Image 1 (cartoon, one colour):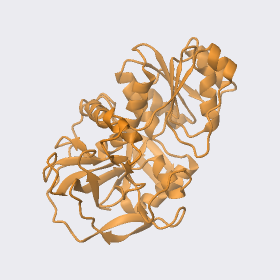
Image 2: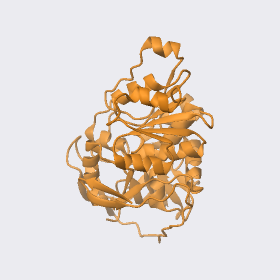
Image 3: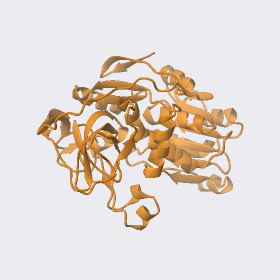
Length: 378
């Protein structure tokens, strides 16, 4: 049992072992589609996050309309609100891109979903499917990519549209609160681990291991047979990382020489590093402690940050630095399969949609443990 304290007050969070099969199910009846709905909207970057009534969108020919039951909250949602990335957002904007719900309407060209199916809203809402990147399965890199909660109104509303090609297929009977974080956090770290291209028994360091992405990265890494060194700060995060399967935890707030401690604990440095933290300094350190032939994978996106690696050491160690963006449709299916088999489970705290602004405050303070999920009915 973890006690989370911060701007959202005190919240009790119960987390079961990642290998415990899912037994808790939520069942839903088909609602009538209303004309208006509740949503959290901001009109300007950094402006008020307003919980208010807005119209229910109508799906285009290639889209489905999802009655969103739950939506995870991602650090990317903070960047979208702050407007500090070099990528324009639509304004006003409904954020969110980890939405799980039920298909209640669909466009005339949609054949891959039926009314009543469970579906997920991902960061990648749609792409052209015709460019060189889409043809290679790199749809997130498409120049015409449509992004949920960024260029397309996302899942912090009760009804949201999604391109039927990119929407995630979720098995009926799945706990939609539990699966929501898998749609971005889970897929993102799973893709990062695939990008690191490690073998079972090798060491992976996860920087930012106690947060929403890191807590899932530990579980995916364990399921892949990797040895895990977790880096984060605080006793709560140390306990969480250990429970999830980290073999070693290093508290960056206490160590006197993090690089030396990581190298010693892994007998020469990790074979791969997954950087989900949003610290530029932590990213630079990862290039120092990675072992020769190691792979440093960049996932977190601190605004304006630069990845620094001394050229001499970089060359002599034959270090690889790789960027890993969100996964494609295949990555999504694979990441969801790990979840369905009970191998990964996000430590979640459920709050009402009306309380979402408090989570933004926690993200600004770096005080997130696990993943927050909003219930759109509250």
